[in-house]
Image (cartoon, rainbow, N blue to C red; front, side, top):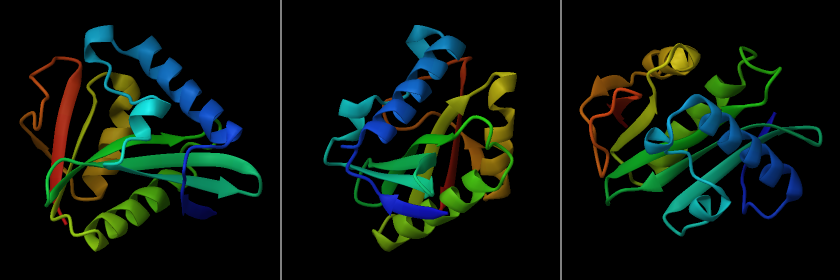
Length: 151
């Protein structure tokens, strides 16, 4: 698997992300949807990585700079049919290392509270994330859980 910083210009990653946003919209009430679309991921404060095997996109993830020391993990996704194959763990480990290298001292995230998101929450727990109060512009929301960890 190859993990690269992605400029989000290719049609494969555009389709991969469109599927992600569509899936999140189907699982989450509109007022609780925080998945970024292509334009949101192209903002200058975002660094986006895609994971590839051969010509296929098999995963992605991003961080958004909140302030000089704090970033938010965004857009973590593994290709359907490839879940539980180690892609998310490798990608998250890579992003944690890169975030630290970029000078961040804390990484936080928002994910869903529904059963569908349980594997994601377990992955984040495995990597040392702990549950926390809402951060940045988030507000308490029964459809969301918030997690954070020092780097």
